[in-house]
Image (cartoon, rainbow, N blue to C red; front, side, top):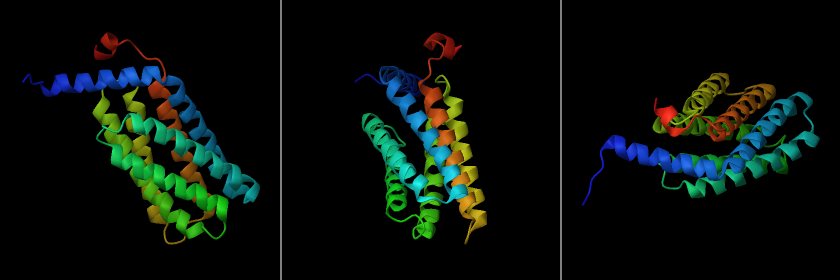
Length: 196
């Protein structure tokens, strides 16, 4: 039975990921754009405190969770799969709470947001570090660090963070994640150039 060195196995993994991202680049970029739009809504929603914004934000989060689930299904063998799956579930819960009753769901949303920020941050940091030197891997790792930093800010503001702060943190997280995903799918240097 032929064995692979750790470096060879990592390169096979990166090549398979590169091929998948290249084949589904439009899906990845679409997810990134939807996440960024949802991030803008999340920042605006607490400032206007209007159900008119909560409803589209809830539906945008459902759409992004659905796209994440589709992409995640194709990447189910990756080490960060469990974290990402929980993150998709938390995103769906936040969306459903927003659609149901945003005012009543405030405390539950705050705890879910904290969980969301930690899970997203840790999983994206681990994923970014595991795919380096994949083109644009540093955007993914940086968005993971951002998620972790935002979770610390929210943790320090407990037990009763301002609604605008929660919205701002979620918005920054979604925009950072959207940018990272879009940059990951963006055409980068050829494999030989990336290795160089």
